[in-house]
Image 1 (cartoon, rainbow, N blue to C red):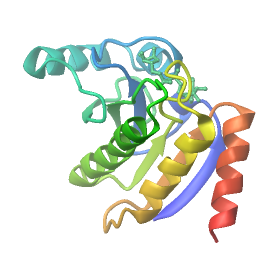
Image 2 (image 1 turned 60 degrees about the horizontal axis):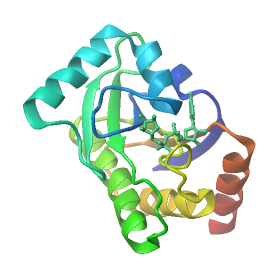
Image 3 (image 1 turned 60 degrees about the vertical axis):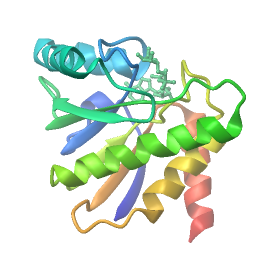
Image 4 (image 1 turned 135 degrees about the horizontal axis):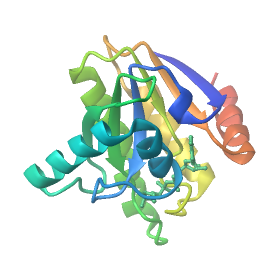
Length: 171
Ligand code: AR6
């Protein structure tokens, strides 16, 4: 799997799937979730509501898929990151699950390219360096015959620098 790091607005990315840092309600919110819902439109929200009615939303660490509505991507994978509360072990496990479950779901949908935002590092206050280390670790160790490219879409300079440094130090 090829790994790419870019600084961009994830709503502009033309990947088979973009990942949303959602909340358990699946009904939208601020940050990247707000941007994805605004750009995705009614169709995206309606699918989220259907999932919510069927299974009561999405638990922290889990992932669900919807159409991308008006977005240039084909699918949106919604995952719910942990709110950072200082419990490093528990939060790290949950963030690991977000990346793993999103990748597993992408694989089951035969997705070739998937773009991730920096889950939990905004409103949920997860430390950026630890979150990046987890994201890169999960993706690097995920063996897939299906997924060809993972794009880490950073929105702020700090995350971009952290990701680039971590990835450079890996090779
Ligand atoms: N494209 C890419 N990344 C973005 C964008 C964008 N358009 N906008 C923000 N980011 P956050 P969380 C980055 O707060 O911490 C929502 O209300 C942002 O700079 O979006 O997982 C949900 O409904 C940060 O690096 O998500 C939940 O309630 C990263 O995306 C809660 O926030 C994640 O920041 C989830 O909090």
